View 1 (tube, rainbow, N blue to C red):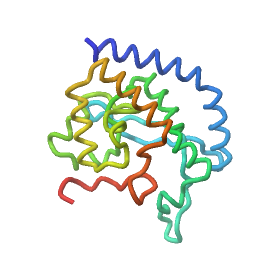
View 2: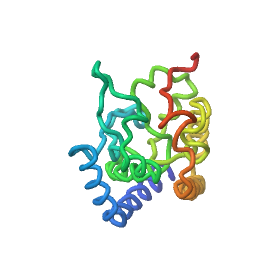
View 3: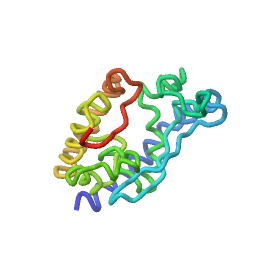
View 4: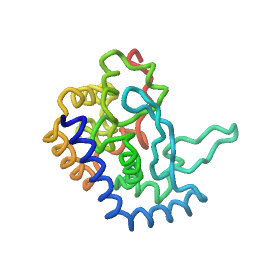
Length: 202
């Protein structure tokens, strides 16, 4: 009952109220990133959701599109803009995902939606992370976020799938607020974000 009725209702109402409360910040960040990214304040990308269904996730765009002489995108650390670093550090880049929650593509709490190309790299246990809707925050995020290994991240995701409840979600939301306030676990050591997942045998 919780996952089918209570959780979706709670997600929708909380996302709606959250957008209304955060609307002034939403507008200011949109304007700042429009200037910093030459008219492109949002980042839209295909991601797999529940049952591996592909949807379009929306976030604030924290990196520009600068490329090298060969036309390849520069490393993340070189493309992070000044305002982008601040938006990422304060997790403001996640605000637009409240729209995904309203649409029903995402939940407030669940495994983070990753890249479609990772789907073929998961083992049988890791694939269980797609049995629930992905979340803006999750058990892996409050236990290390980008500072932990991919294997640990997936283990936390699967743990959540097996133990999700209202109390667990409240615990995760509470710990998320604390993590955001101290800007903890934003990047893996030596990286601006995190190294791409290359499979379990690498």
